[in-house]
Length: 71
Image 1 (cartoon, one colour):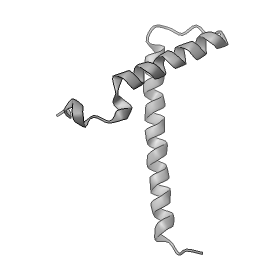
Image 2 (cartoon, helix red, strand yellow):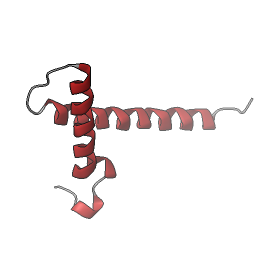
Image 3 (cartoon, rainbow, N blue to C red):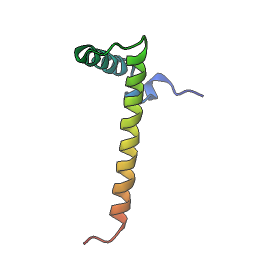
Image 4 (spheres, one colour):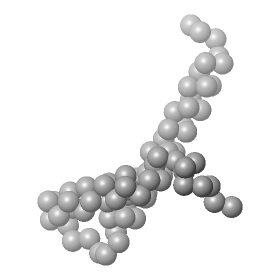
């Protein structure tokens, strides 16, 4: 079951993903890398997954530290 578009995360916004894909493609072009078709979109998706994972890790570490003794 998919969530209605109003309930989707801002990270899954097509506008935001497209902007990141354009930025990735531009950076690769400036650095002289030739990217295959669709690689920029895939890298944008991986980038968002990385950010979400690091955010969850940060929350977990913060909650673990908050439950321990304050020194």
